[in-house]
Amino acid sequence: MEELGINYTLETMPFPPRYTVDSYKELNSLGTVPYFVDGDIQMTESVAICHYLGEKYLGEKHQDDNAVPALALSVTEADYGNYLNWLYHSDATLTFPQTLVLRYREFSAPDCQQGQTADDYEKWFAARLTRLNEHLSTHDYLCADRFTMADIAIGFSLHLATLLKLEQHFSPPVADYLARLKQRPAFQRAQALGKEFDPFIRT
Ligand SMILES: N[C@@H](CCC(=O)N[C@@H](CS)C(=O)NCC(=O)O)C(=O)O
Image 1 (cartoon, protein in one colour):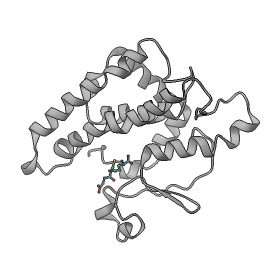
Image 2 (cartoon, helix red, strand yellow):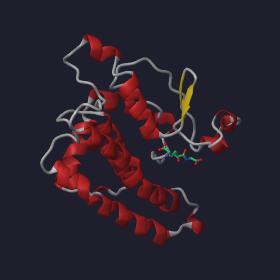
Image 3 (cartoon, helix red, strand yellow):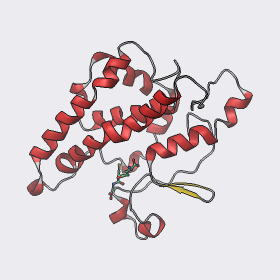
């Protein structure tokens, strides 16, 4: 939403809201974040939200300002299939193994850690970076030679990996790509939000 330049309201909560916020499950029965509301629409899948925002708000700013390219690809663009593939690749292939590391290494009580599970899924994550590494060895962005929602989705997976201290598995092109994404003003504005509840800041 920062990249699109649209107005929004953000509610931040201590993690996990399923336990910390009374009545959160009355709003979102899964108890998960993100939970996104736009009029009558309620969404719980991060990448579906990116997909939706990219198309629906193609957008407000871009229509008047041709200098800012659209964050979504249309079905008529040559890279459309690649765009969808990178969008889905983020959560289904890169974030998924990290959730096991998160669960069994970072957020377990010390006496119930399943270190072997976390170690196995760290290796899985490292292996699943192969396709991204190949692509970024010859491209600055994932598709259409421009920054799109696919870069936001994949960028999140890589950013999460740094929070889990998995960045040693990044090749130089992957590390450079994430560094470029993190220099974007919209990323930096978004990063500043919700710091008071950041579960990765340890005191
Ligand atoms: N596939 C969903 C997963 C949502 C999800 O599991 N979110 C996690 C945080 S990344 C969560 O809310 N966990 C807290 C809980 O399960 O109580 C997405 O990509 O948004």
